[in-house]
Image (cartoon, rainbow, N blue to C red; front, side, top):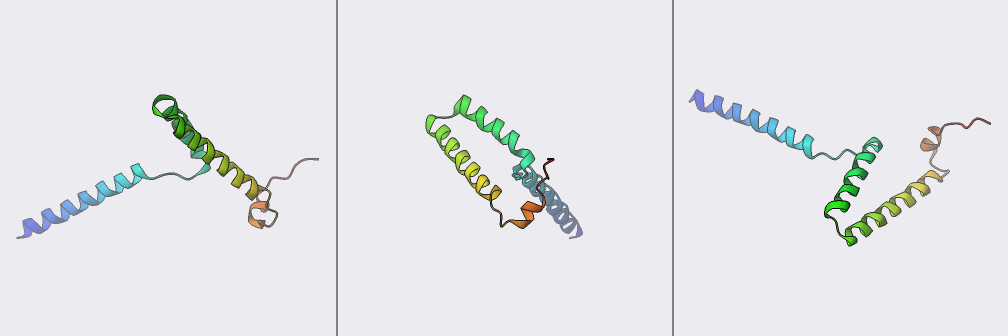
Length: 90
């Protein structure tokens, strides 16, 4: 009886560790420092196994995101973002 309970607890702990490991492996990092890696893998994918339509889709998405970043960058109402802007030397 106790053997079954102990085995069940051990299996549940192993399953928990496996789920945590899978989560960490499949997690997407949204930090800006991860962008060069994303761009590298995007270009590698297109170069070796992509199609013209996939390449155009990626170009359109990049343009859309860059346009959105420019809008955010020039938004004078975003006080929190403006506080982090470095001051230029005159």
